[in-house]
Length: 323
Image (cartoon, rainbow, N blue to C red; front, side, top):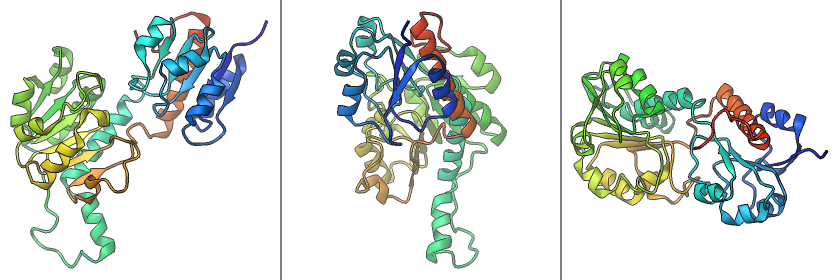
């Protein structure tokens, strides 16, 4: 009896996951540590039982057509799944595995780190060490904003938003607000967070943290109108998906000092072009989508992706399946 076949879209995911698949399946993969070219993806998924992909790979009807009727499962090594045409997969009975829980702590840690780096102007200060801007101690030199007695607003109070709130409590903010489609009483009880409307959150928060999923409803949720509602001393942090932000509107808000600063771990596109206006702003800290870039987290993400794929092939319960 032939073994199931799996195509992996890049070779530099943690080997623990790859080995799990090799033990039970015939595995082929793109041979370079970079996103697989579209033509290679279409050619190599033909007849496969499963696809192991990353958020760089667009899994749409064209890919599903190329794979054919043998395809049983798409496993993505990510919490986000906006790169996958979910409805097309459902129509064809293709199951989707993802990794929503394992990267929660790593992403929450990065979110807090990015907030602190932006608020305390760490990247600006570091550059001054190297470019001669550091002359002497001065009472107003590189002053930034602190979390103590501040109001923190979290947009999207799911797993990551909750873990961010937990990590911010020791910094002694005055209050933590959250905006979410539903009440989160168990999260609120532990952190003291209060659910408010989006307008109230934007108007009252010194720090606005976006940890919301990218859906058709949240595309450009943060636009010129949203930024105009924020305080002039507000700091905006996004570690969710670049698509939730209108980047032109963000640039204008920062350039015109409608808001104080922004910290982004995600952009559109990725990587951000070197001629992006956002890169000209001293009050915008940008990271290259490293929210889950922690060794143990990436190993576990690879393992779970492999386990999801094996479960999908066998028709049994996945570790984490998109319902």
